[in-house]
Amino acid sequence: MASEATGSSPQTTFFITNHNTYEHDKAPFEVDRTALDILDFAVVAAENFIKIRKQREKNQLEREVIAGGVPSDVETVDHLFSRVEKKYKWTDRGGIKAVLKMLRKMDINIVNILKKTWNDIKSALPLIGMEKDLEEEMKLI
Image (cartoon, rainbow, N blue to C red; front, side, top):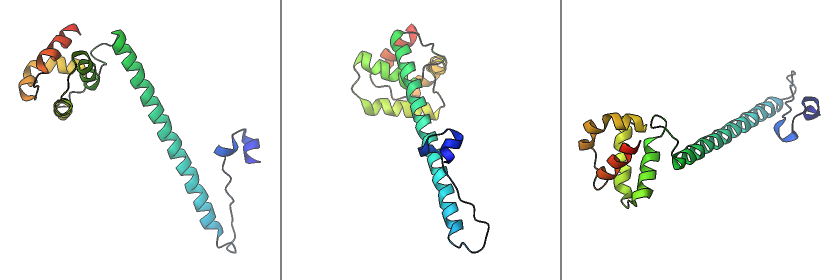
């Protein structure tokens, strides 16, 4: 009935009974429980929306990177490393993770910032076998 009145789906329409008398000892619990169910539904729906949106953004960025159309002020350092790892067939995942972790600690998340600060920070990074490949790739950006 409530879903018909609002035009909403029965799965997303909730009806809460409001008891105003003291005779219904169980009513406040039922109303509270229904309200919590509604909140739970809203949180789950919001989480799913955010996950889907983030995945779409990630997929779009990856398509643009592959096409070569992402400017360095938009591409993330994670995407750069992922792309360079595939291109140069890096095998040391532990070393890559360590470098990315250090870059995050330095608040370097975008390729443009990495490129600008590269000469200052490269000596502090554990770039075993990666430095030359990264420099080559950053020249292309």
